[in-house]
Amino acid sequence: MALTTLDPKTALIVVDLQKGIVALPVAHAVGPIVTQARALLDAFRRHKLPVVLVNVAGVAPGRNEQPRHTGEFPADWADLVPELNRQPDDHLVTKRTWGAFTNTDLEAHLKSKGVTQVVIVGVATSIGVESTARYASELGLNVTLAVDAMTDLNADAHQNSITRIFPRLGETGTTQEVIALLDKTHGA
Image 1 (tube, rainbow, N blue to C red):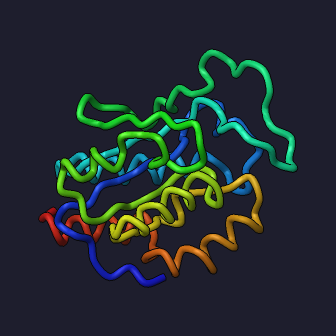
Image 2 (spheres, rainbow, N blue to C red):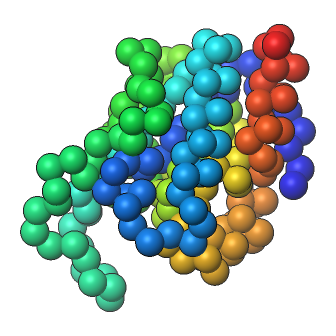
C-alpha cells in the first residue's frame, strides 16, 4: 500500500452501502466495512470536505451472460444504511449502471466543488467501486481507495481489483491512513 498524500480538495465517494446490497452474500463481513466507511464519513465531514453517497436503483439495459435481476426490488432496497448518518450537505447520486459517474451529475458536482482527488469505498469492489475509480482516473482526478472499507460478492474479484487494478488507477491505503493524512493536511 502506497498512500502518499491527499489534495486539499478531496471528496469521499461511498458506493452502494444500501440495504439491498449489504444484504447480499459478500466476501467479507459487511459490518466492519460499514464501520470503516462511517469513520471516513465522520472525518470528511469534520474537515468540511465533500461527501458523496451513491446508491443504485436499477440496472442498465443490455444483454449479458449472467442472470440479472428481473421484477421489482423491495421498497427499501436502494435506501442507504442508517449507519452512514446522511447529512444535509452530503450529495446523493442514484445510479443505474455500475459506475457512479455514468448518466449522473457526479462529475459536475465535483467540479463545482473544485475537487481534484477522490477517496472511494463501498460494495462491490470489482463492480461499483472499480467502475467509479476508473472513470475518476479518466477524468484526471487523483484516486485513493481505502481497501479496508470495501468488499465484493466474490473474494477473487476483490483481490484482483485491490492487487492488480487499483495500483494502476491511484493509491491504496487503509481507513486509518486516509484519516491520518486528512488530519495532517487539514489539521486535527
